[in-house]
Length: 198
Image 1 (cartoon, rainbow, N blue to C red):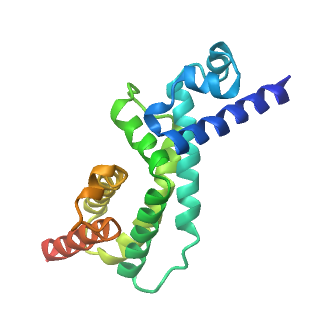
Image 2 (image 1 turned 120 degrees about the horizontal axis):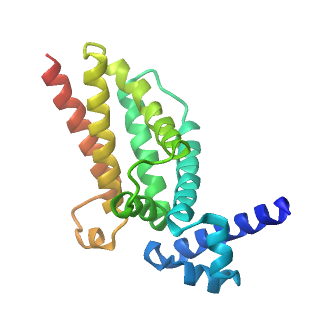
């Protein structure tokens, strides 16, 4: 019985993921998922309790994929280069999976959750820790508290900006290079912090 339930769970996740990739984040509803899979809405809610939980699981899969994408990069001895390589890989990931990334970003805006579950937060922290290691090498003179808040500001800025890059409205701004805009922000921010720390 558990194996059957697990199989249904996985099939719903896979089909839901395919719907988001093909049709967009706004297309994903319990009714559309039911139509696409043949599973009743009752079965979907029996598996996930609500669509927020379903989307949370989708987002955890996306975060796992992003971590894998970033963690295979071979580090350079220069932490500035490493951060730039992480940003390049991060932006490429977002632009290659715009609907899945927008689903994740949109969830952060629309969700009524007061607290994210620990498995979700652990995935975010794993990704941020890749950046943190390089960030600490650059800003050794900052206190741990200053580094923490500075890195949080950087991550939130990149997270927000990268999500806007998934929107087609950016395509009309022909002077904006989607691949370079996050790098420009990163390097301007790092330069500003370097000046401030003096």
